Amino acid sequence: MATQAADRAAGDRRLGYLLVAPVVILLLAVTALPLISNVWNSLHFDNLSLAGLPHKFVGISNYSTMFTSPLWTAALERTLAFTIVTVIFDVVVALALALMLNRKFRGRGVLRAAILVPWAVPTVVSATLWKTMFDPRAGFVDYFLGAVHPAWSSLTWLNASVWRSWVVIFVADSWKNIPFVAIILLAGLQVIPNEIYEAARVDGASAWQTFRRLTLPMLKPALSVALIFRTLQALLVFDVIYIMTGGGPGNSTETLSFLNFYTFITNTNFGLGGAISVMLVVLALVVSWGYVRVFRPST
Image (cartoon, rainbow, N blue to C red; front, side):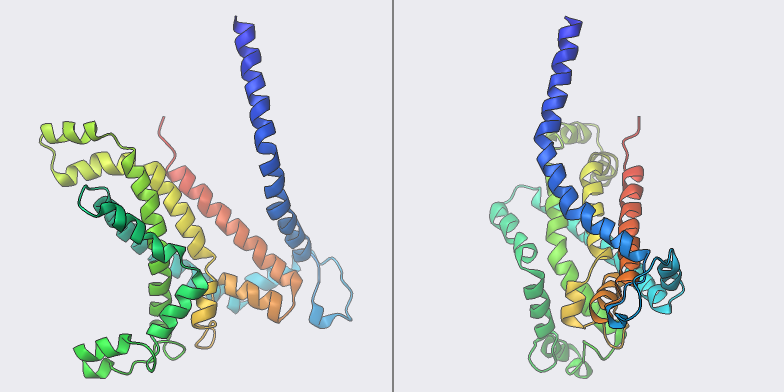
């Protein structure tokens, strides 16, 4: 009997490998080949604007150039600052939204569907929409602010002030991504048994004690998924910045992804661009590994 059970388990494993093999092969073709190409480029001199120079192996020269570049340092600082602020804000707001949507009230289903609208809107559309709303001539944001204080009736939000540009980017990016995080957390809340909360009420636990000692610990799996996705989105943010500010004023809103795009497309420096791409992948892997370690179930 033990031999038959072992054979059955081995057969199930083989079947599982066969079922996931096509997806794994597809993912390798989509992700591994470009990554290998970028690693190869990062170790070579490959600049199309200097096509007359030979394509040669330069080792870690591109990485040395990248790490010593003030553009890289500034873009890294902006990316990390933007990531920290947006992730904390978005997760807190999304958690409050998920807790509200987890309660029973009339129209809950309609509201759950409605909050997905910002996330379903393409980033190009949502960024253009917010750019128009903050335009001092075509938008209505300054109109409403002017009703509060006359000096706020003609603020230039984009490409004039660094802080105001970042505020607009932050608003547009959070508006689109908070619903996605909220849905993930809502799914996590719905698998928590109601019996646990009933037992807590019988024991006289307050709402805060129930949230801190029951909801948050049992929400850790969903919270880790939401944090990983949201952090990676923030680290790799590009499209909303490209549409709204183009990296301006100057280069004050350029992130690492924007710097990578500029190096690849504008400067056609595939060697240095490959090095930046590899570091972005490494940064994403480190962040994901950190979250997995922090939220790993205790044994």
